[in-house]
Image (cartoon, rainbow over all chains, first blue to last red; front, side, top):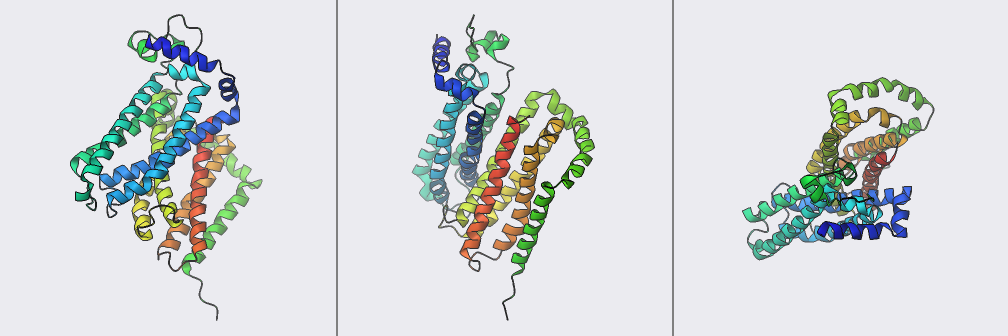
Length: 190
Length: 194
């Protein structure tokens, strides 16, 4: 039922004029994808430095709050760019994207990473006055930072694997893969 | 008597001259002979273990490519923080020398992983990239970026920015951002070409 809903929604998006234009435009699609990847340097690059600061690896002499606050805004601008371009990339090829195993795993990981970030932010706010200038953050903060790094490594890997068609519905998937990918029996559009 | 030109400025000028010569070579007809001479190397790259592994197992190639992107993110973060500081946009209350020295180590780690993963990927698609102009643009930009960091930016900023003209500092930061953006963008464009 859930898979049918997603498939119907993707079909509705695919029928859109702009979806086809985006998908068939060589330069527009490629520029959007390039922006999506390049904004990694802005968002993920700065996030790496925030997490590595908590682990005592990057800029340990600088107070943790200074790093977190000063880099947060440009990092969020980068994430905003990534989300916007990501939505456009999805809109360009909605059916295949919605039924991509890797895309679904990536979305799940994004959700988990967001929850981790909120928990991390909350814990940091509660306790930072006691360890702000210490080179190493407390254990629970370090765990949050390490988890953040791990989640984002797997998000990038899944993002890269979306391009590969090993588990595409068009190849006739069955069993767990078929269900997880949301393949609909008898579907004619991929 | 005119003041002595600082040694770092002379080194910067020499590096810029080398880059200009490289550009002139890259856009001259002489490059075709050099390009032809590299064909056996690229043919050999595809026969190496890296080349065979990259061609045979798409998953391996994809994961190495993801590592390349993550290394680029680390390198990009280091460049953005150091150049953002030089431009007075980021971490303005942190001393410049501290930012430059602490980000450089992670920059080098990111660069090393990016080059190592890049060599693996290049072996897997050697004959495709040999004929792609955008690949050679990327190599040119990468060479320029590495030379720029080690022979212009670091020596020039080693003694602190107080003795430097503020416009020189801004020019260095903007040039650094431009060259690394070019490396990243041309790298992405390889995927769309051929």
